[in-house]
Structure formats: C-alpha cells, structure tokens
Image 1 (cartoon, chains in turn blue, orange):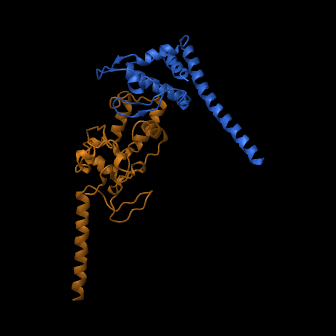
Image 2 (cartoon, each protein chain N blue to C red):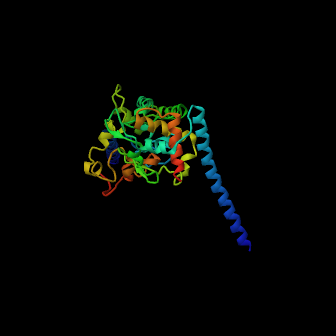
Image 3 (tube, each protein chain N blue to C red):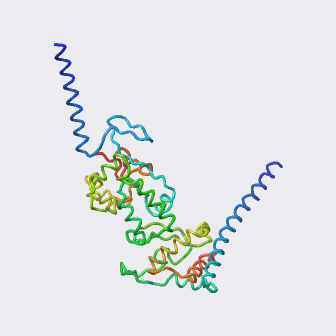
Length: 139
Length: 193
C-alpha cells in the first residue's frame, strides 16, 4: 500500500515536471511570436515557413546554392549534418527536440547566424515567426 | 686518491646536467615544471596548458568545435578571431555583444603571450612579432611538434580528418594535457617518437 502511494506520487511528480517543461517551451515561442508581431509582423503561416525552408539562395563567397534544408534536411524530424564541417544537427521539430525552443536568446542567435549564412541577410520578424510556427506545428 | 675520485664525481655530474640542459633546450621544451593542478616529477616533460575555465567560451565555442585553450594563441590572434565572427572560417558564428565581450576578455587575459605558462611561452616564441595567426595549426611550434605524424594518420584517417580535432588523439586535451603519453591515434594506437 505504501509503495503504491509512493508510485502514484512519483507519477504525479513526473507528469507535473513534463507539463511544466512543455509549458515553458510554449511560453518562449509565444513570447517571441508576440515580440515579432510588435515589430510589425502579421499572422504567421507555417506553410510559408515550410516553403522558405526549401528556398535556394546563392552564397556570395562560395557561389553555392544553399537552403535551410541543405544542412537540416527537408524533414524536420530528421537529424541533419553541416555540409562543410559534418557536424551533426539534431532534428528541428519541436516534437522531437522541445528543448530547442526554451531559450529566446539562443533562438535569436541561431536565426541571426543561419539567416546570414544561408540567405546573406538577417531574417525579418515575419520570416522568423513563420519559421517558428513551422517548427512547432510539425508536432 | 680520495680527492681525485671526489673531483671525478663532480665532473661527471657536471657533464650529465649540462647534456640534459642542452637536450631540453634543443627540443624547445622546458623541463621539470610543475603546475597547480598536477605535481610533475623531475625530468618529466610538461605539455600542459591551463584548462578552459570560462563558461561562456565553453558553451558557445564547443557547441561546434573543441574549445581550444586560450594559451595556444597570442592575444592579438584572439582579438582578430573575436572581431571577425561573422566569417569564422567560412561560418557565421556571431554572438550577442555581452557574450562576445565576456569571451574576448577571457581569451585575451589567458592568451599565450599573457600567461607565464612555459608551454605558451614556447608557442609565443615560435610566432613572428608581426604575424597574427588565426589557426593554432599554422604556428611553427605546432608544425614542429607534429612534423613526424604522417598524413594517413590525420587527414587520411576518417576518425581524425584534421589536425584541428585535438581531442581525436590527445585524450587529455579537455583538461589541458597535451603530453605525448596521453596521445592515442584512432586506428593506430599510442604515438611515441
């Protein structure tokens, strides 16, 4: 009997912890989306994010045609790898890697780096919001 | 007779210490050093630098590659690297200003030409005053130390690929230990010259 109570207590604790994490992730994304809207973005569109993910751009320095999917693959649930360094890149889907979406500073850092690397410029608030919606809708 | 033996012994020891000093000098190493982390015996080569202690540097930089010890490049090199992060060997590795300043300060104050570490001094000496190397692997000291390693063990070794991957062979690299005794080349084993 005693062990049963402990077990139930444990299950409640775990589920609370899990929901807490999910909530925190959600919170960060919601907060960012609100911020992007305050910067002039309109309704976000996951489909737009999906098509931008495949959009090919010529890198000025290398002359290569690249897109987000060049390194991340076109399937958000798959592990990608960097075309030059070979570094493994964990799946982008929030369903598989929810911890990717818990730190606003980190999200902004990678948007800045990767938009500039891939597109040769920073992404707009609208584009970042569309991407984030795309990553999180794929649950 | 006793007197003769005494002077003979003195002379013998003199010769031994002189030859050892020459050996140490020619190899570019300094001997018998001990540091804060580890007591090293007399006659043992020092091949250690202080391990990386800055949290931001560890987190940010080793997200992509080995966090190279600050004591491997002079201050001027680190400053140049940190001010050109938008094109970091072909990658964009930009940071927010706060993190960037934190890391730059750490690297600058622990740089090869700023620390009394003997290993770092050897590296500094191998770099011309006006040159600003951006790669540790370009310094004469590094080239000299790895001159006997055949290409097949590094570039031709799928588990190593590049001299930039310190940790592939220097098993104690994360702790700042680069001594020959902790070298293990994947597929080839220990390295001794």
